[in-house]
Length: 154
Length: 154
Image (cartoon, rainbow over all chains, first blue to last red):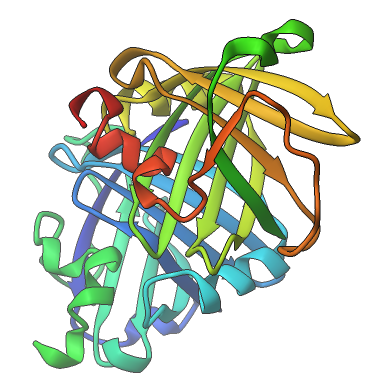
């Protein structure tokens, strides 16, 4: 169990790609409720199931467990709410902080968001030039909500 | 991943207790939807998360993973739909088949059901004297439904 504190932003340009490593992520949801989400995810050769509680400010309870990748694939295509989320995730570091940038594919193509994980909600961090406006509290951008209300339909 | 085939019955008398071992089970749900349930369970000193698909006849997809018991307890009381399910489970064998009998507690007190797991939907098995009518396809008796519609309110 952990407490996850993260902030989320739109992305203005693709400069973030210069030094970033891209990885394909596929994820789907077994629960997309406001109170609790249950996510199945696979990337590289790894599978995970992740349970997250309700967001208070920008933090929430999180539990994550490794699962066999065959189970993850099977649940993504046979049990999760459809369509699943597909995105290219870029990992990069700016002024000592790790950022992740997600380029969504499929029904959410065109959407690019950046996230930073913090130890404290009030922590200060440098903002890279390619960073757009903050969307931490805009629930439309929750991955769990992009399943039921994809970006292309906005 | 496995396919679970089980039949469920009401229980007419408490003769099943004679040779059975009782274990306290606590379980709660992170999803109680018809399409997919996500269950957190703890008994003895073990914790589990279990995902089940939609029931077709009496079989359905099932995935189960061990999790730390502290996580199970934390999710049961802080994340699962309330109230959680509490029951005394009895394990016993009758004519070569393993039966489990659940005596529900709390908001489901008074309900006692017996389950048998089969390899094939058409498999034959002996019925003990204490067994009542079959309720396999009565969705009210699903543990996931007893959360939202407890037995005492029927």
